[in-house]
Each structure stands twice: as C-alpha cells, then as structure tokens.
Length: 373
Image (cartoon, rainbow, N blue to C red; front, side, top):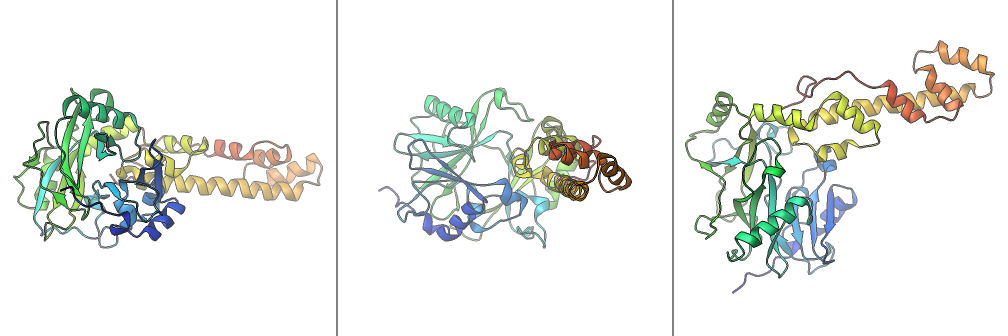
C-alpha cells in the first residue's frame, strides 16, 4: 500500500511560511506543470540569520501546489539546512554542538545536491533552487539512462550529489555520476536507512574511525587537502522518528582554492555592488564561509556610498542659488565629500555612479580581510 500523502501544513506552519515568502526569506519556483512548487530559503534569510522551522525546512522542499491551498502535499523533503560546525555557539541560532552524542561521519562531496521527486512520470531531480537548472536536467537524464528500473521507497525523498567534469567547483570528478547521500522520511524529516536499498550506483563514503568530535578537527588539520571538500557529521537522534542534526566541516586548503575560484575579495564585492548588485545576490553564489566577510565589507561600502550621496546632495541644494564661483568656494572648502560630487548634482550627472568611483578599494583577499573561514 502506498504511503499516505503528507500535507504541507503537517510539517510547517503555513501562516509563518507565507509570511517568510512575503518578507523575501523563502523563494518559490513554479514547475512547468503549473502546480508543483519548489521552496528554498534565500540569501536574505542567511544575511539576517532568519532561521526558523520554516526557513530551515525549505532547502529545496517540493510541494504539489500553492502554499495556501489546504490540500497541498509534500512531494520531496530534502535535508534541512545545516551549518558549519563553527557556527554552532551558545549565542547563535543553531546552538551548541551536542559533542557527547553519537555521530556518523560522511564525505562531503563537491557537486550539486539532486533532490528526487515524482510527478507521476518517473523520478526526476531538482537542485536546491531550481527545477530546470543544468544540474537538475542532467541528473534526471542520467537517472533515466542508468537507473530507471530502480524502485524508489515510498514516502521517502532520495538525495544524491550530482558530479561531473563540467560541473567542477574545486574537486575534480572524472565521471558523471549520481552519488547517493541518503533518504529523508517525508512525514517526519528523519533519516531513512537505505543500506538495503537496491541502488547499484555509488554512495557517499562513511568513515567509522573517529572516536570523538575533536578527533575529526585534528584529522582535518593534520591532513589538509584540496582533493576533498571535507566531512558531514550526522549526530544520531534519540529515536528513529526524529530528524538528525548535521554539520559540515571543510578542509582549509579546499576553502583557499574555492576562494581563488570564486574570487572573493574587497574588489569583487565593490564591483558587484557598484554595478547595481545586492549583497543578497552575491551571497547566493558563495558558500557560507564567505558570508561574514561579504556582509561586513559590503555593508560598510553601502553605508559609505549612501553617506556620500546624501551629504553631497545636501551641499548641492544649499549652493544651488549661488554663482558657479561661489558654489565652487563652498564645495572645495568642505572635507565631507569630494567637490566633484557636489558639482555632479548641479550638472545633472549620475551622482550615485560617481560616488561609487570614489570608493574603489585596494585589493585584499577575503581571508586577510577578516573572513571567518
């Protein structure tokens, strides 16, 4: 007998979910069939550390229809949002790590999360933010070419890492593949034991040699590499029906190379913002480790820019009735803003763009600029 469908309202508060969508903390993508939706937390949620049950659950959650419809059911429930180990503190939303609890350690793969769902025409895959990303389309094609005859357990969301030479981030993979990460029970969010599932493809490696959590950190320091991303640590819950807490730990050398690949620096943040981009848009493209730097440095740039624009406008307004010579005397005698910005207002130029040009920073990489990596 097929498992009962799970309504969206059974796993989250629909009212709070709609509030988070309206506030820009959760993005909604509509499937081409016009019904299914994919719900994903946004960079704004990360930027504001707005971690609620709803935003944590919406990490590629797929539902059958509009959020507000009472009959909308959950079609796929991936891993909930999980943080870096260092983000777990007494002051943070994530709280302290349960270091005394039993745990399992798995390799962290450097590809794209592939979330399995079925709309009645066979298993397909979405990525965390899209039904139709290149990786989602490729993962669906690959499954149907190689594994179409594999029966998927009912009521379970199967989760894979899609890797391919063309999808390289830092770690290189020679072959295109779907690597099994695990399965989540749609009703409870708990991990499902898939060791006996007849999936013939590769699975994420599990490492059983660690006796305590601190030993993992020592191992990573002593065996630093860019040939692997790191580990995912799953702390075991008290009962099989409870969701697991996961944390990620990344090698320092991997992060160094990722920074090179993504080009995170004072200049890259400046160029993004001065071209009209937002901090939230930049965060969407970066791993969590670089968010603190982008938020801090980008926020400072935005504040300085706004101050220059507003102060120069005020001075320009005050001298608008003066002669050019008199206005120049006022503009050049003050030190709050460059005189060119004042004249920019008087001459009808794009002062916002002129203000950005005065703020271009010296090049400094994220790590040396204070990023917590």
